[in-house]
Image 1: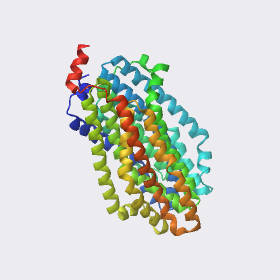
Image 2: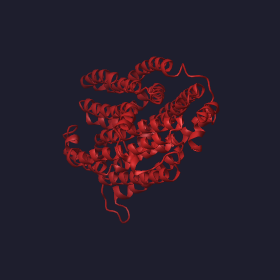
Image 3: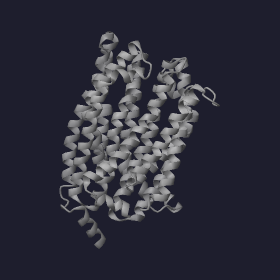
Image 4: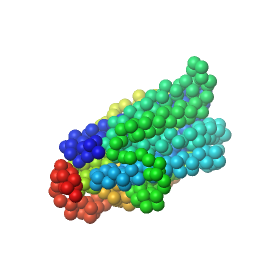
Length: 471
């Protein structure tokens, strides 16, 4: 328990930084999975832009897989960390075991979808037979072999709950390296490997994910000493699963809204033209590198604030919130500056030209202006999850990825269909949605803080630990 109890003793700024850095690296590498595939397939000798469009169509379903895995992991993370903070090792272990059981159920669902539903899903977005065929091949492999990403999402969160986030990052790095090395070999047919095109990109991705899962599992079994690993804890418990999803279900839905938003916008932008879909899909993957930094800091905020909330230290809760928000806004500002400066060379990595490159550049210039607000919204979601505010977290997701994004997108898309010179106006939908959502988040935070935190005493971390030990 020494490692987990350190979360209640280390100065909060240093703790948040030490937790954030490996998680940020881990999340960036997760974004790299998607970008690396896109870079290599877009530079294929034949049909490179069509292949890039195919990956864009498959991407929302990949996001859904990640959403369900990470959202479930968030619930497991918060419940495990809170019980470690209380000193309840039994309940922490049950949360861990039930998380593993849920991972198995999630994988089974996506396996069946890959076998029977992937083609119908792809052709609901395109009528182009070349793009549809490539997208179906790619998605089917990703779904059938999704056990790697699903179980890595669970064990990554368990390592984070135990204060071992550096090891989840190591596992992520191993998978990313494998993916990057295998991509050109399997896509282009280098050395002993046959040329597989987009199927090679999918194979490299799932092999990398499997390596990350295997490493995370080993680290969890060997090093996560605050959690007891027994088969009896994997046996499903309705009460534990209910508690996991009371926190995690809003996070699942919130993450899944990324899928719904991307799928829906693919359909809306497809009315303007295939170039618009390709430009949006490519920009989305580029911006993920920045937004995933905010997700990484959020994933540090949740266990830090949740642990100290369970321990009953208002001072450390306040510190976790303050430093989490500060780190998020610093990184989002840096990301905004980098995107604005390097927009042209970034777009050239993907071999874009003509109208597609122009649209992608305008997306980078306009949408990136919303980073400051989107970063704050993501940080607030981590705070809400840590304070048992799952519905508040879900509300912000609904606002920024559904309620406030689609009405302006549909209106601007209609204008662009009548006048192609107005295509760039569509990108303004994103800053509008993030700014309005940030205002709602501030109101919800003030209300939740008064309800959950304001009445807690001003105990320091050490004092709270001593008090808990005396009990």
